[in-house]
Image (cartoon, rainbow, N blue to C red):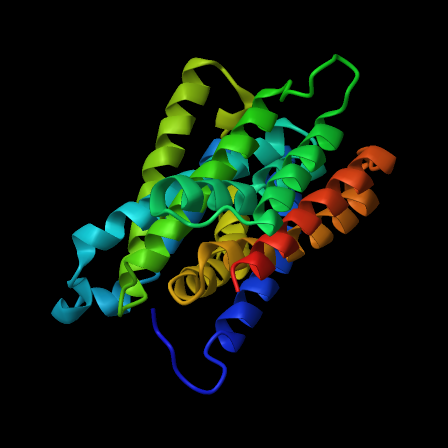
Amino acid sequence: MHRTGAHPALLPSAAVAICGAIWGCYWYPLRWLEAAGLGGAWVSVIFFATTALSPIPWMFNRAAWQGFRQNFAGGALLGLAFTLYTVSLLLTDVIDAILLFYLTPVWSTLAGLALFGERLTPQRLIAIALGFAGMAFILGFDNGLPMPSRSGDWLALVSGMIWAAGTMRSVRKPSSSIMLPVLSFSGGGLIASLGVAIIAMRADSSLATFSNPEAVMPWAIIIALLVFVPPNFLVLWAAQRLDSGRVGILLMTEVLAGAITAALLSGEAFGAMEITGTLLIAGAGLIEVFGRR
């Protein structure tokens, strides 16, 4: 793990928090592009393809490729996770997708216990309990035991698990170059996005819509360059310098930004249950991070 300066975690922590806030508004251009005729699967393909081209200046430096094999797995997992998360934002309520994804601190805690022999402290028990309680409030109690009821719910939940695995892998096998994490992330995401697009086409899903490309494609590339590529560079850089639990909580600025923008712009319900779930999951993340100190 890289450590420089008196406060080595300050800059990467600030970068992750800012990127989380940007991603909290990520759902809006996704839905705008979908309404304009570009399905979510193809939006994801374009976004990841744009990201894959961004490390070109580094690719000609042979030294930058050192450690590619051990770095690829972590980045590819993160790319797969973000692909599933992108799709989930179009298949369920915005706040439900965001909050189910942000159970990542819970999954990081459980993985640390199961795989790396970390101690089960009272703080972590409370974090796990709060995380699952928050999920229960988000999903509701109308039909008995709270379980994901829509495909988007399941995708958001699974994407959070995969993201936790990817961040844990990245922090344990850091790269000296930003090129490798970005290329691995975009490569994994591009393959996953193409897979989703093929499945969506066979299922005749709206996710595979591709109409009016001349008008929509330039906007998709512009949006990718503004709200997708820069945050990904920063988060992937920071994920190698912070533990996965801290990355998870700092990215919870997305929960705040997503809750506000969804309440104002999406017309979706955001009542007492959603507010309670938000507070519980945010509390789980805070306790998990402080428990790691």
